[in-house]
Image 1 (tube, rainbow, N blue to C red):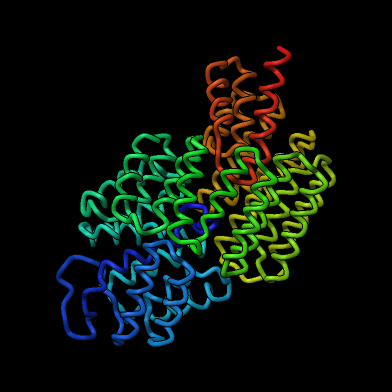
Image 2 (cartoon, helix red, strand yellow):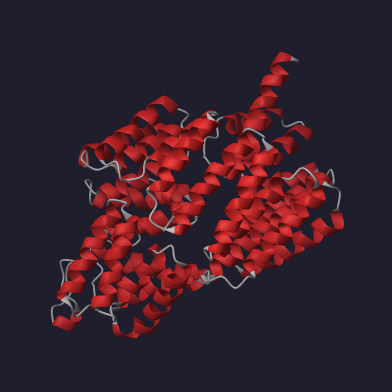
Length: 493
């Protein structure tokens, strides 16, 4: 299951790395860690048991239950640093994320070196402090070269950063160390799929299903990868198998997402409503509502789309979810037909980040970059080159200070959009190619290729756009309209 990781793609299985050491006693009990896996420092046998149960639930992709277990573990042992840092990642509650991260950092001097590296890494990527965070990750890999879960988590992080070839290398290592490790197989299949290697992904998924035929997530993940490959009916079959295995797991979301990219928007909205009933926290509820709102965009029903996204923004504001409130306004800023209306939504998105709602520095910085990107692109398209240029310069400054891929991509896409609008097509291509996975960028890149006479590249980009089946707002904003234009061109060449 990947769709549950929207906005937090690391969260579901980060603590599997910690689980590698759960059969060991910590240094506090006097037993040395000699097995080459990450140790756990807690003085409480009960907290350790709760932690182990959380890790099992995480590997089964039952994140809400895992959060409950981790909360119990830190309640039983308030000095349980590893449980605190993992709770900060898995929780959907911004205040809990902050307090758990702060507590883990306070306790770091009292735990093992490996756990300190874990805390430095996971806290750093939340605090937009990527250089020491990545260094800590690399040190952790070097310290535990035979810990398959350390390798797995590094691969998982790379998938979240869209560095798929590197993720494949790391995850293949994890699977080599533990051929029957289901969670690593799950992530490896996604890494293959996002790289376009669907046949390899299908083979890994078959192994994953065979290992856990009584669990819902293998079928759910298989369904998602089949959908990415455009095999919609087969995807629906897998999702429905997941529902039969466990009706409470939440695979109705996968059914809804698949129906949405198929163009069955009314059916999709009905399924989203069924999925929302099973959601245990407000953040996921808002995310599902955002997915449902995108169905109106696919139908190009401007009135209903604006109404639905406005309701999402209000819900997010009431729930104290500032980043999601900003996202709803940002999507509206892209979708609004009128430039002035779009800029009002940009302002509303920026204001949402400043309401004082709790969020990590990384979340705030990255959403700010996405908002400025929209401002740059919409202004460039409206020939407002001074405004667009100012936004591009601001993103360039942010990119120089941050190692975030989101910030980097936002700058490159914005610079490319401005150059394209100015008729500097070759220069635009060099920037746009830096982020050739986002449909908003792919649309611009296809145009730039066409304008420079690079017909094969333009046709290849068009084919990729046509077959893009991610159920995101960006896909809803670009792909259905692009597909419709191809049909129109075929009828009226």
